[in-house]
Amino acid sequence: MRFHGAILVPLCFTLSVWSQLTYTVPVVDKSDPGSPLAISGTASFTELISADSVASSGNFRIEARNVSGKSIILLLAYFDEAGPHGGGTHHVIQIDHFFWGEITPREALVLASGPSRRQTSVLHRDSLEPAAEPKADVSVQYVQFADGSAFGDETAAKDILRLRPVIFDALQRLDRADSTEEFRALLAEKLQPGDADYFLETFRHTQKINGTKAARAQVHVGLVVAKGRVPALQAVQAVLK
Image (cartoon, rainbow, N blue to C red; front, side):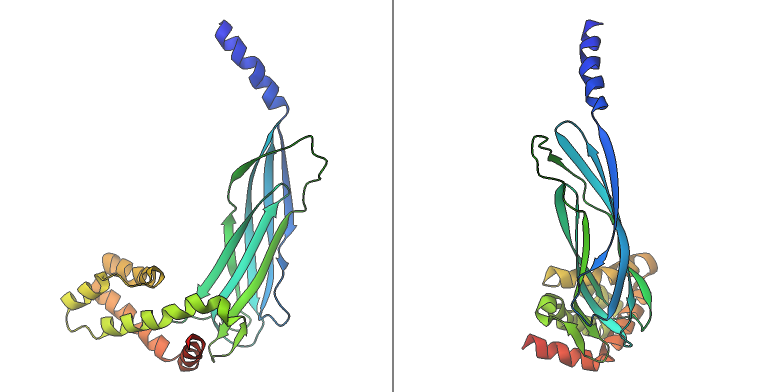
């Protein structure tokens, strides 16, 4: 009984100094003028403050609308968010429709959503420095349109653009496979770099769930769409020189 009493006293004291605060701020578009996307959304930060620490968590939802009048096939954006007591997180938002799909003019979409990274930091109560203003900033770095034109800094998207020829060649080999066995063997091969191989996981998943015939059909569709992106393909080749 004495043991339990000694534990309960400090526990009650700790709970009494806890406080929880929630802050909700609008997403701010920090893109350069002329961005083809109109950005909106909100970010919420919840902080559980105790005597000597603050535990932070949050949620965000970023929406975008294509206001360019052109179909978008590649989008790269950065999202930087931070609560009042720091611990910000940098997110990379990447949407690539080179092999299928596109973001059509006036189309609205959810650019990103989900929880922020949970973290705990030391709170110096004797400091006179006030809490920072919460932030949720989005900046569109690069957009490529279906006609090959672009917005933003191409060097920011070089790593993405370099994957396209690698994936394109892999799809051509898969599409030319003479037999089911050859297709399966080629699909099982690992591509380099790893991000290119990650793209093939879509077809591997299709093969596993729906069979080889469905995977071959999906590969063929992706290849046909890519071949139709001639202006964008030529623009990529120019960037990589």
